[in-house]
Length: 131
Image 1 (cartoon, one colour):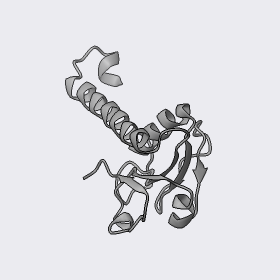
Image 2: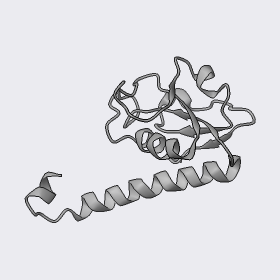
Image 3: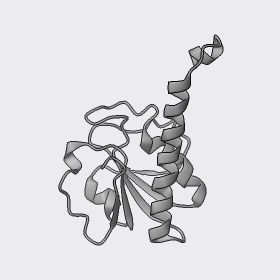
Image 4: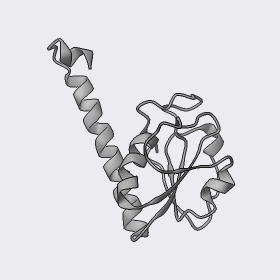
């Protein structure tokens, strides 16, 4: 970023990026421990923060990017945001929550929108890194 280009110490920004990378790895490890093989995962919430349509630097973007290399079948749903068509990693954009979770073994809360509170996901494993 700018601070690095002009040779300013960016300790906080570096630490935040490291934490974000570790959260992604931890979530994927939890998902793989539960499902193994070729996982079917629904990521609910692709926005950066609740109630937002901004997806830049969101947890969901990072999760999709990493999980796509594992052969996972990924579906996404967000009532506020969609990833841009230029987003390079394969996933199925769904128009409803039910469509997104219909084939999922695991549900990951990518952004904790209020719309996802209190939902019973049935037999599916739910990973919510925000709680």
